[in-house]
Length: 180
Image 1 (cartoon, rainbow, N blue to C red):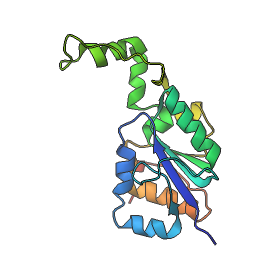
Image 2 (cartoon, helix red, strand yellow):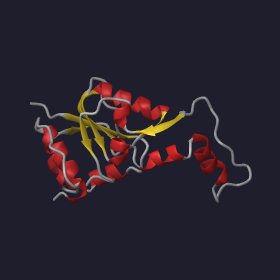
Image 3 (tube, rainbow, N blue to C red):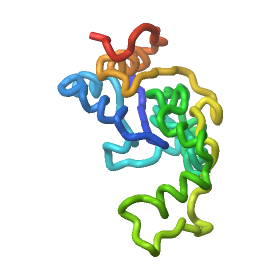
């Protein structure tokens, strides 16, 4: 029997969830006995297989039109979608931008920072993604498994992926950062 294919991607967040994934250390080898790790930010492949994967994982919230495209592509190419971390599950820290509004956030980032010189301006190019109200992945696509935490522990990630790899639905509850 072929191992289930797993792909992941990140949206608006800090990449801490993928760092927590790497914190599995030698258990990654155990996990690779159960799954075929495909496209991820930590591998050479960067998009989920066109013919699909069994498990897709998204880290980060939806903060622009490109994030929306990535989430929709992952959803269309996976059987089970996991929202990994508080940003993917709730919007997380990136959603704090919602309180100031897009224009104020852009002005602060590109014109008002202490390191910006007098020529600072907000980038304006039709090829750039457009900012949207930051929201969780589930506001854009159907999510099957939610694993909150900032970042979820390596133990929690290992548990969820191991369960999914063995055809079981993981039971996610309790304090996700204190799993042993």
